[in-house]
Image (tube, rainbow, N blue to C red):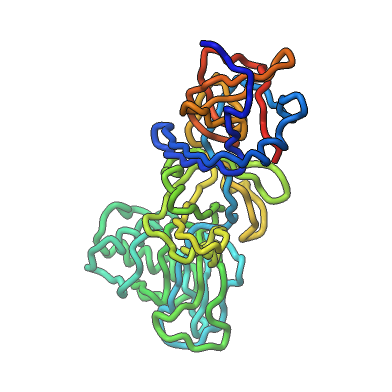
Length: 376
């Protein structure tokens, strides 16, 4: 193929380039409006060569992107009062509470944390059956009060009542052998107090929030425009730039299925609205990231972080800056190769876009070649 010396036949795309990426399969669509002649003239020297060049590089290219998010805790839940009375003590904001720890007290009676996913909804007593009973027995065994109990059995037996009595005696509570909402609350694991919803001295009605809780492990949340939501999938690895320096690895746990029409990114770190979003009014979905070393991550709640989504990676490919692309007069795309004091247009086949670069394929291209890049 005969290369031509550049005489305005190729038109720079930068400045009016519209690149639309369909991330799945590495596909793409590119449309371009060339810059005006006066704009292009600024990119050339008197001898017709471009003022700026960049090398053709060989290496790995990732289609990932970097987004802003927040460092928070696991999702929030409200803990309602177990019964009527005066709130006489409540765990402070920021407190971490483990199994059997006090959450709050009503009329001096503590409500303690037990682990389980089914909420306490009744007074559990001898003869009752259900998942709540199974959870109770597992906790009694874990705490050392349930010697001889089958933690997988869902029946409140006489042995269960005995174990409950032991637990009550250890805490200097009335030894009734029964337990209910006024005594315990179930949560999936250790909890952190996000905030107090009721103050000491208040009389919370049954079911009204006393505390807002989160899990104790750190999580990262961010929001993506719905148009980019396909670039984030559950299980994808990410890298997080942490406050104060350093990085952490993790993976995407969930991608929201419902777009937030406001895209305001407001809300608490544990709540459904948190996660940095920009407030540009564009519909967004929330993405949650779990960290590989969540217990070792430090930083204030709601600290800003940046998240690098890995996306697809192509290895050992040639790439050039996206701005180096030309719209060729005969159709298609090319680059302006500059060597030996001359410039020529070289048609290229485009591959994957990423990190401000684009994969290019063509027999005439070699690593280290200089290509013209218009001034910004």
